[in-house]
Amino acid sequence: MGKSLKSDLLLGKKTFLMVKGENYNPGFIQETKDIISKDYSSGITKIRDILINNHIYEEANHLIKSSLEDANQILSNLEYDTKYLEYFSNLILNRKF
Image (cartoon, rainbow, N blue to C red):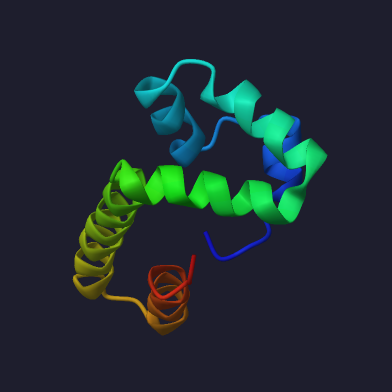
């Protein structure tokens, strides 16, 4: 979400976003590879629009936030120094798309 997706898209990796896109529109992963391989800049814009317009991005963010909140709750109950794990969790939570 906050890293370059170019290699993932070109390789057709089945990330959460791509699998959800495929569920919404069978052939989405192959279509994505085709679009990206021709023109990455305009292709990534089209793909982001699809992910946002179909609430796939929103669903992914909700799942990430919920999972990290659960993890942070578990960390807060441990009798260990978990500040670095909590810091890492916050880094993930605050990444930009």
